[in-house]
Each structure stands twice: as C-alpha cells, then as structure tokens.
Length: 542
Image (tube, rainbow, N blue to C red; front, side):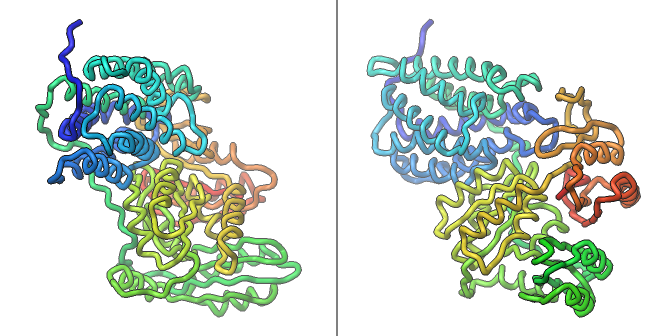
C-alpha cells in the first residue's frame, strides 16, 4: 500500500485536525447517540462530544498566533471548560495529556505523538474514580499501546495514524465483549465510536485532506445554563418556613400530617429526638404551633418567597460585593418545581441541567462564582454530570465539594441533611450518608427498540428505572409506575415522594397516588410539582 508521506505536524496542522475531527464527529453524532445502552433520553454521548469539540474549534479558530504552545493551551483549556457529560470530560483529559507533551515542541513527529498518547492514556484514567474497561478509556489505552509499538523516528505520520485508526476500530468492536451491559444491549461503546470518528478526522488532515465540507450545525444546540429565573406567577403559598425540633418522643407521622394540611412542599425528616421541618405555607404561626406540641424549636426561618424571588433576581444582576458565608450549596436540576424546591431548602444557586442537558464545566463555574461562600457543595443529581462537576472543582478558586448524587431524590435527601452549623467534613459525611438511604425511581419513554434483562423494549414503551436498573416495561403510565414502585418498596420504607413532570396528567397522578395508598397502606405518599422534562414521574422512597 502506498502512503502519502508526512514527517512533522505544525500548530496549523493541529488546528485543521481538530476542525476535521469535529466535522467527522458531527457526521456520526446521531449514530453515537443511538448507542446509549438504555433506550431513554439520557445525556447523549454524541451530542456531548460534539459540544466539547465545538468549544475547542471555536477557541482555536479565533487565535491570532498559531504557535504550538498557544494552540495547545487553547485546546486544553477550551476542552475542559466546554466539556459536557462524562464522555466530554474524559475527552478533555485525553486532549490535556496530548497538549502537556506537545506544548513545548516546535513540531510533532511520530515519536512525540506516541509520547503524547501515552500521557493522554494516563491522565484520562486518573480522571475517573473507578475506570471501567469497555469504554472510550479502553480505546485510548489501546491506541496508546499501538503508538508505542509503531512510533519511532523512521515511521511516517501518515502510516502511524493509519495504524492507530485501525487499532481504534478493533478496540471499539471489542468493547461489546468487555462490558456486560453493552453485550446485553447488543451495541459497542458510544464514547469509543466518537473517539474513533475524531481520529479518522485527524488522519484525513495528515493525509493532506484539509478542505472542509461546510454544513449547518444540525443538532448542535446552545445550552447555556441560567443560574436562576424570575418567578412571574403569584405563589399559592407565600412563606417558606423551616426549623428544627428537639424533643424526646417526637411523633413524626402526626407532625407530617399536620404540616401537610397547612401547606405544600412539606418535608419532615429526622428522629424522635431531633427533626427538621420545611414547608411552604400561608400560616407559619399555625405550623409553629403544631410543632411546639412536639418539643422545643430551634433555627427558625420564615421567608416571604415573593421577596426571595425578587431579591434573588437582583443579586444575580448586581455586581456588588456580597457578604461571604462559610458554606454554600449548588444543585443541578431542570423544571421550575424542582428548582423552587431546591432553593427553598437552602440551595444558593441552580445550574439548569439534567437528562439531555448536561451542563459544561464553564456553566458550573459561572454559577459557583455567583455563590458568596468560601466552600460550596455541588449536587450533580445525575451520573453523567458528576465528572464535569469534579473537573470544575479542580479549576475553581473556591473550595468545591462534589456530593455524587445520581438522582433528584438523592440530591433532595442530601440537601436536607446539610447544616450551616457543621464544618465541611461533617456536612460531607452527613450528606453522603443521607443520599445512600434513599431509593430513586424514574419513569420515562423508550426512544428506540432495545433489549433488557426483563424483556424486549419497543419504541415509545413506558420504562421504569430504579437506581439505574430497568425494572418495569409497559404501555400504560400508571400501571408501569405501579410495577416499578412494587419492585422498590420494602417493609422498612415509610415515605414515597412523587415529583410530577412533563407528560403526566392530573388524572393519572391522582389515580396513581390512590392506587399506591391502597396497595401500600404503611406508606405516606407525598406529591410535588417537579416540572422536569422527559420524566413524567420521579420517585423517592425512604
């Protein structure tokens, strides 16, 4: 086989490689998205990788000086700040490793490229707490291994890239045999396919094919996450009331009934000795009166939520220096109801994000900068956002502590255990323990045909998921929800909270709540308007 020859890559070549890599990735975006293991509207891997690459190309396209150090620094910084989802963060770490090696070089030859890929493998593996084989990590490891075999002074870059792309193709095909969940779904790893598409784009440029096909940016959306929104509608309940009760035999069940009767978004948690109460009400005095029958009251806070909303908007628009407190909390969620629940529970800021809306590192950092606290706890509330939050913590000037919540239910449980009077480590332990105590359930709709451990899934089926595992499949929203809840409930469980989202009707929700109460009379059922997209119901069981 005859190869066009190329001995060195310049900084300008690197810019073109990333442009072509992005174009190739866009061509594969929808295919990569369809490789998601669960047929649910999750944080799409293809879109996350495209958005991460787009951030890099936008940055390097604006450079005036195309020397290697400047280009490498731009790639490393832009990929980190623009990283979306786990796949985007891992990709940013691959680029970081490459850039660390090439930044002080005038040009890149085969040997330097091999060293850069070695470094990329090491850094990307270190970025993940528990690396899993059969993912894009495996692909970069195999590519780096091939580079160490083939790269030397005498090997041409075109020949080397051909070998690396071949190895990436082999590695991607092998992922199905390394990860049981991929084998069960009958797919290869989505992140690995995305990385392969980028490498093929790199090879095109090394071969001399720099001419790019100009296309509309189909499917690439701007997802800048606002930190708060004005509340236009009048609130049914005006006063956010919360406090701590200390007693000897606090009747939590009776207290919950009384508090629920007097308002909305009621949360009563704790023990017979100490309990925390939160409620939105028009009668804070009545709530306090009920609570006084159970014990002494402490840390009483009553806020007018209309005033809070107005003040929050003013603070976000203001550039004034604010008083800095010791501890703050930031939560990631979507849906006006969930947003208000987190804010009423004490969150200092909200990043709009979740399924299909994975915020970038920059989105999180922008919100962190608006929180006037020295140490900030981050609640990602989605497994695909945890790594992004951790990367944000590494570059922020503030101390950031990521509580790895994978669901809204875990996030609410964690923030309820947060206490301004405790230090960072005490809060971290308390929040971690709280999130582990809750069971999380989700109802959504299948976006494609698929297979699962419990049976075949057809597009538009209702799917019930508990703690990341598909537990129920059906065509009826209420029946599938009941099936899911049945798989979750244990004798020790006491409270089931339902967060109503888009795609659910009031009639279905009322029927569901009534059926649950009849089937599980020992459960207290609480209902909140979540407003979350894509998931008609979210369940929290504890």
